[in-house]
Image 1 (cartoon, rainbow, N blue to C red):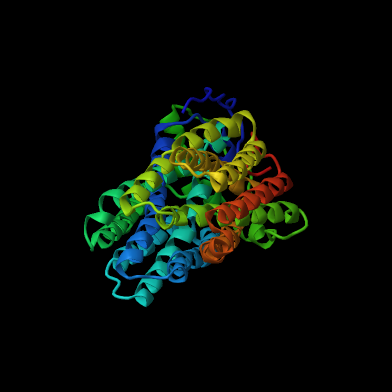
Image 2: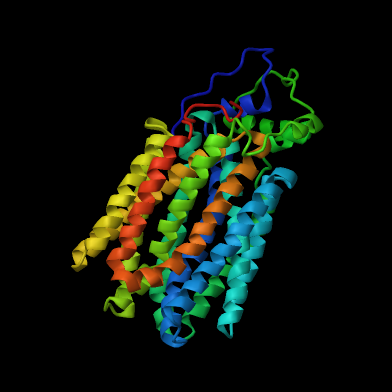
Length: 451
């Protein structure tokens, strides 16, 4: 990740820990943090993406109805809604790294256990627990990366973190294509692989640093100084060993922490919650059901999985373009343009009838939708001050998960009302609403997180 050389502070200059981090170039320690968080992110995507293929297998083996399959998808998102809100609160109380590791452990164990499901009820319980861990992890990981990344490339770093989602989702498509149709227990073996995050939680707990901004907000100045110096040494930069700029005591700042619905934050919270809600509704409604919809429209199981794998590959270039545009155009404009592209792609899919048309519309939907997710994750932590950043990001994600619960449940009645075409027209409208709501958000490119 290219970056301009930092301008060291003059000898004797007094800087806050946050300002020193903002001025650094992208170093090997930043790369380790990004990749370490990204692997956890990819494992999340793998588990969520795998559900679409499990649903297709269970449709054949257990003879589930559309309604029962929609509940399997939605119950995980119910857990994510609870987990996102709790994870954000905990991240502001006990730290980003601690919550990140804990959530990986919870959903890894629950995912492995779900492979043993003996009934629909048991699978629903396990999927709720998986969602609990997943929902808490995602906003916490993006907040951690955002608080460490140099200001000039902070948005790009978070989009690159989000790009690991495409890696995990593609891996899920590949495993689904190879394992699920291989035997009656193929879906169980696929879910066993979801237990890997439980082991990776140990790596996260021991290998990733705690957020400097979080440490300073809690008055743990010596720990924050140690972490900052490690990053400075990695960059070959040595600032003056003089005193840090005075930062408010932990008790004082905690007492003055604003609520996410306070007067100064109300507009951005409204916009953020609306965008998260409608993006979740369309994304999870579409991508959870695409394999089953293809099967329902006459494709074989193998052909449905093959098409879904190809469509999924469109995610990676979407992230790549978004990572460049969030710094060249800005977060808000990139988010809006990719959401408009997502709406147009959903409408194209609703009208697609031939195989080439379905693939083209699906790839475009992957490209624009995942590019929009990258911009949204880059923007979300930046609109809140440090003391409520975890809470703000977590509450927006939690509200969005309500839509991800409703989306899979809405597909069966929409199919009854007019088939696949109506389903994707509704999803296109939801993307359009999200695009309009994005203009309630501030532009945060090149701003310090404390601004």
